[in-house]
Length: 132
Image (tube, rainbow, N blue to C red; front, side, top):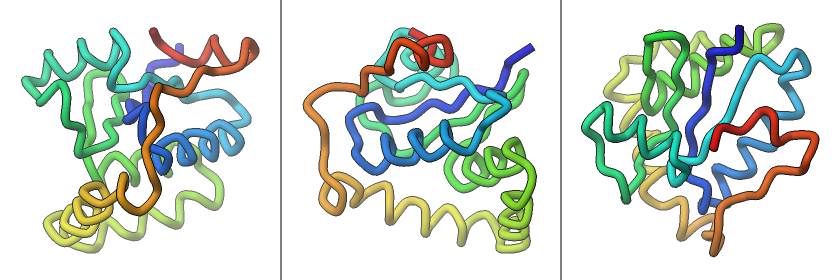
């Protein structure tokens, strides 16, 4: 059963690029995706008592476990497996340092990479991997 979901800011160009990359790398289709602006994304944010309009983190959920910031990125690498597992070595860096670097990028992502007017619309063949 697919229960690994990547939640992302659908208006962020950096985030959309990351999702396109993940789709290409996830040939076994383990990952599902949902923008934080979608109904599924808003439900997750509400259930975690998180800000529903200002997104500062990609969120990864697998089963009942929810990962934020750098932990989310590293857990996704682990889910992809193969050579991506080597990136999990970054767990040796203390979380406050990893999350600080993540937050710097997240805070500046619109300025550095731009913002879309609307969320990405998946192609018909990719639609099955996106939660509404």
